[in-house]
Length: 267
Image (tube, rainbow, N blue to C red; front, top):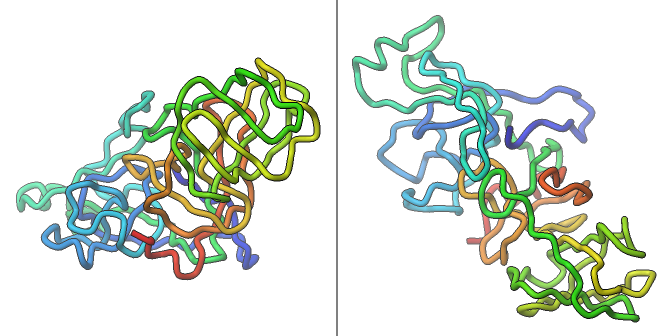
């Protein structure tokens, strides 16, 4: 699944969940935003990153879907690069469908249970992918080596993450297990100011992601079901990262809480 509840800094120990009518098809694990300003769909919440919306990426975040309440609920199996990864609510504005979906306490329209993202309180766990669900971050194989431990050179270009907003991790070589803050990226070179403790050798394997411990930026994957870890952060939500784990390919993740003003993005 996508985004999930990872605890509360306030010590409550339980998520705050509210039920909303939908203004779009939604899956469990998707991040949702208010539908107040997108117009026309008639729901309370929309998917937080939908290209057809009038204000993509700049609406206040509400939280993430943890359950499908309405009778349209279907299960869509996950697949690499696709948005389907579990229970789905199908949006409808057809009266006959609304009537058919009526249930105890339900309105008949698409309805989802949302875990509210309370800034600096609700801890959220999210997979880290490259642009779309299920696509692992690209590994970097060192091509030249650097005795000073500050320069990682690769053959394939990667996104230019904003200075100090990215993390690089060594998966193979003398520096295995060490994380560093990225301070500069060019087409084929990543630079850090605080050096890795040992020389970097040709063939060492690294991976980098557009997130950093503490205050950082978060951009969503295409279907708002994960963090896009390979992004230049031209647009992002301000979040506080409590944990970043880049150890295993395809299983990278982060745990974060929204920064107080970041229920609106910098777009």
